[in-house]
Image 1 (cartoon, rainbow, N blue to C red):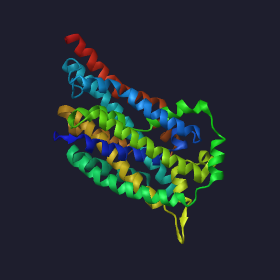
Image 2 (tube, rainbow, N blue to C red; image 1 turned 90 degrees about the horizontal axis):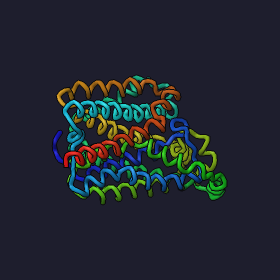
Image 3 (cartoon, helix red, strand yellow; image 1 turned 90 degrees about the vertical axis):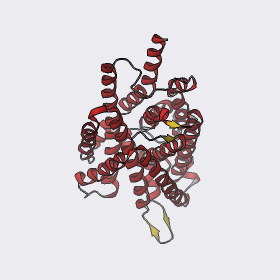
Length: 346
């Protein structure tokens, strides 16, 4: 559990997580909108990520590294903060898990057992988390390569169905009022920022360079996927629950049809790895009661996933305001508290 990881390992895993967020963007779950303003929202999200990480950059640049929640006061204070962060991480994991289950039962296998589906993805995440951070991040490198290959195939498939008319109809629907809400939804749909905050000081390498590389890669990837998806679906993308999936599934190459297996493969691998990392962080923060708390949180993810057939439950656990607040509390609140505490002792 205490083995060091490199910044490259950390950010390769985060790229996998980011690709999963983009591929699984859902109007139903996020209650969002997909039009030409979404392209500007993706660029705004690039800036917003950097702003949220400013406290971490400040700590890192001044050599004031911290293994949270150490350095945040007395043992009792650290315990309270640890419990609060564990609850938030578990809530984020529940949101990621139920979104995957909702997608699977709505788009792929309507007759599949909710319990068996949730059990499968949770068991995979638990296994990954128990292998430890070093093994988890090494595996994520191989999985990222596999997902990139899969996404490349999906990209080539979608290109077959692009249309200038479809993209033009999307441009006509531009609404500047949706830019900032869209950026907040993009941030809220990802668990990457809390992972950076809680692991960056354990990783060897240059943090700021890694963040810029990761943020730029994810933003470029999102823009390309959004552009191609918009050129396939046009304004119809706003009426589909998972627009990227619909763009992939509507394509055909010769006699080959239904490429949803490729999408499901990429979504499954990305979700399992991200849930594994979140549960790994829960175990890290749990102290002496690590295993018990770890399995309780895993059971919570399993239980919530069994409600994946309910759009109300999926929206509840993926509420943009709650998730954005939780992410901000972890990635900006913890470093800010550390800086305030250390300024008192200096």
